[in-house]
View: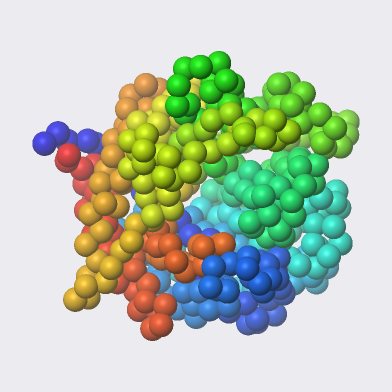
Length: 452
């Protein structure tokens, strides 16, 4: 056994998002979001599931706060539901919505848990989507105004702010692949959405700082290294395209390099409208980068030469044939790629600090005699934290780690089929049961390290 210890000031946390756990979608003046609408489109969400109740966190707040404290969490990353604050996306503020998040923040602080607030985790008010959504430039200012409203209310107590969660998902899963809300399938739309989301981030940073002086402000991106099956030029070029599409398209403009030239050429006429000063605004300096990462992507050259992305992912069966172990999502488990990603970001971008804002895995958990012995998840967490420590030793400025997720929840297009939680949720009774991984994580936090 070898001991792995983290720096004394390392932050240990867990993460959730509003639509995935809160429920209460019609309570206390909340307006509809694009996910409320999307879930009602036949065939879009497995089993026709939706977030109307989810984990009912909205009505079980105090119990869930006590649960977090029992697990020894030092920090909790949650998101604010935009339509709870501004039911129409702009205009009149819903006091009850602000009051809920104020109770959440105060409850965390009372238990010694540091709040990390994400302002946008995919819950665009439907009223804004009806007016063009993220494709329309007016939504940029609407987000900046919303960010200022929340920061004005909570900025005296919240010292860690994240503008957006995973702009890639917002842009490409929601507007190119169509598997997330709002369900568009057009590259030009997706690229324009990506640009407006990034622009709204850059313009929101000073709006947040105006109400939360001294706070750390950043953005969370989902990243993953590409892997090729061979060293052939065609396979390596597919990896380059994947990297441009999934990683560099967001990192490069955030850190002052503009959009990557190879991808601008590849996207051609689908490129978004970029006006003067947009790129400077996107590159507004931030205090940290949030990274969500679960797995690398294994790709090959696109079967269709007209595919503007230039690559196709391997299927789960193909990855198994290549020797990869997979999670219940069909994602390959490659801990060393996680560490390599962190080292690469630190080497290639001027990142002052990194928080791992999501990392975890879905497995086919079973509740047996009141317990869930999820040893595959324990191994996943151990191995990824060990890889994180290697990256730390190589100079990556990683300041904290948030396990995804605190509890089983609504997993977007997968509905309630996939379980990522440290805590099991019985969706019939909403009973919470900490899994073996939760108890391991509690002990790891207490020791600030673990043995392998």
